[in-house]
Structures are given as structure tokens and as C-alpha cells.
Length: 372
Image (cartoon, rainbow, N blue to C red; front, side, top):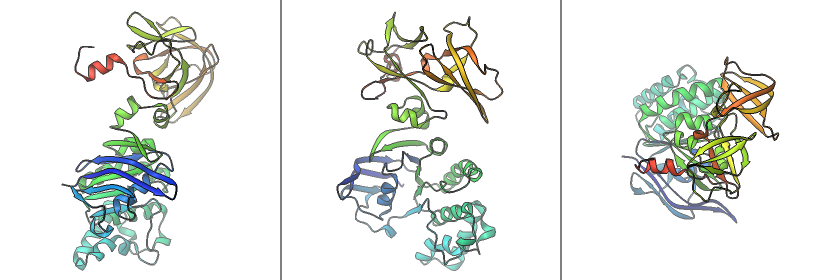
């Protein structure tokens, strides 16, 4: 059983703290995605797990064993880098075979292992080529094959699709989950692409400034972002964020958009009358007839087709911009006066000062198994 446990990891470079008291558990066979902006500390964390660098504080446990002071070659870890890191003087075959060669495997085992993984990644026809003769996509697959060939129990993938073309990136998003599941390894995958994180991760750990800001399934991260910054990172087009002051009517809080009430559910008394930010995913907003219940008047400014969806920019009565997303081919206004409806159940409220997500009392009751 291969688990990964990071306990109170600290890594500093001179006066800069790159990893700040970071603790993380990855289950056996789990695909965990480290997601966050450049400079968050993702690659440093992978290199530390691999044993390329050492922590200043904390421990690294692999399969329950403390590996903090164990050399990289004895950790049983496979790693693929975003810049491929191939040996230029070696053929693709020899690059892939290098982990097996280092363990003095037989020629027969090396040949069989390389052919198997190369066939899976569809690069068996370029095994005699050197890196300079390979396309970026072939280089990426060669680096990934090298990481996979020794069937390492722990696999670290550092944004391996970043430098490949859009078509291959899309294909690999579909193929990688199958390949990694067949490998049976515990996987830590780094990316700055939220779609990739959503597609590949059993769980996502959102990193910023050397800390983990939120960890959960893709659905949990998307449907309950811990703060405004995480909400902004997930979604295309980006989430609508509007300053509001919630009020209460009956048991529910509400806000007003274009002087129309949008009910939000049951929030605590401390939220009512306090400056907040409402978050509305573009797909939680739809165009409706003026006579529909809760119809909010807007002015349509522009429309942009984006392959599978159409995104519309509209203005509220106060001139605030709202993005509305609908499936491509769905009818909708292209300019001038229109009306929208907001699904208040899918709205988020964030604290204006801290940016933290404000919990709904009725949802908390459901999670605790109580009657809502």
C-alpha cells in the first residue's frame, strides 16, 4: 500500500518561505491534483517528495515509512517534468529505459517494458529517434513513459501537458485517467489548468503562497469554493462577483438586482445588513420572459459564441456587468432590453473583507443529517 503523508513541511530559500507548515495526506491509489497559480509552491513540493530537495522542517512519509532523509533513487518514485528533461544524446527508447537500466534489469525486461508503455502512449514508432527529432507531443509522451515504465508505486507529474498543443492536451485529458488507473499508482499531479484539474483529480488541493487553501473533490471545489479567489480560478467564463448587502424576508436572506429580489436561502443573522459579495456562476443565470417569476431587467451589450456555449454580457439597472452562459444553439437576446432569472440556490455569499465563503444554515443542517 502506497500512501503519501506530508507533515508540517517548511521550505525556505533565503528569506522567502516557499512551503509554509504544509500538511497533506494522499490515499493509496488516489489521483490528487495540486492546483494553483505560478509561484504557489507546487513544483517545489513535488521535488521535495521526490527527494531532489530536502525540507527545512517536517517529514515525508511514503507507504508509512519516513523518507525525509532517504536519497531520491531509493524512494520508489517516478516523476515527469513539464520541460520533458530528456537526455538529448539518447534515443527515445533509451530515455524511457533509463529507470530500468539504473536498476540493472535484464535486456529482455527492459525491451518488454519500454515496448509496452510506448505502445500505450502511441510512441512505439519513434523509439529510435533522438529528442531533437521528436515533436513536443512525442517528447511529452516519452517523458511520461519514462516515469511509468518502472511501475513506481508513487507517480509525480509536474504539469506534463503544459507544453503540448491543444489537440493533444485534450486527448491526453481523456487518456491519462485510464492510463493512470491501469498503472495502479498513487499520483500527485500538478497543473495550472482548472479543466485539467477537474478532469484528472479524485481530489484537488488548491495551493497559494505555499499553503493549501482548500482540498476536496472537483465537485466540492466548484460548488463550494472556500473563498473568492478560489471561485475565480474555477470556471470559464469566470464567476460574476457583485457587491451586495443581504436583507431578510421570512426565513430567507435576499439581495436585490435591478430592484428585484433574489432569494438566497437561510443565512445567519450576522450576514443580514453586512457588506458582502455575491458570486453567480454564468450558467446559474438564464434568459426568461419579462412575465416570468423573479425576472430581472437587464440590457444585453454583447454576445460571444464559444464552441459549446454562448456567453452574453449584460448590464443591470445600476450598470453592473453580468455574464450569462447558455448552451450553443439555445435562443437568446443578442442586444437591447432583456430579462434574466438567477438560481439563488446556486449563488455564493462571500465576506466582503476576508473573501471567505459564508455558510448557509440550511445546507449545514443537511450535511449534519438534520432536517433542513
